[in-house]
Length: 112
Ligand code: AMP
Ligand code: ZN
Image (cartoon, rainbow, N blue to C red):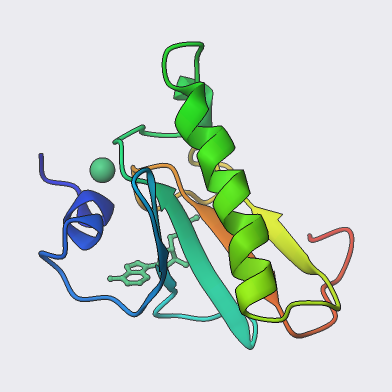
């Protein structure tokens, strides 16, 4: 499948890995929007959040388990934000579900 994030998870395209386990891969964003900005993905190809269902939701739980571990590893004790862009209006540009993990600055709310 011609998917950028599947290729990154498979090591076919280089990335700066911050975490990996059986289900999840996480790497630094090439255009960071915060001093710490990682992209956390399930290795299984799911297009976007609206494609989550009872057959594939376990890997999404694994993503959030991984986020808690990354936050601990990276000492994000002041907090962090997890963002998922789903579809065109939200600005999703890569068609493999991913969660932005942003930290180490004050994050405005509402996000705009
Ligand atoms: P989104 O706009 O939510 O679809 O987010 C896609 C994110 O992937 C953006 O923040 C990009 O900077 C990031 N991105 C795209 N290509 C790469 C890459 N090769 N390595 C790391 N991050 C990437
Ligand atoms: Zn993919």
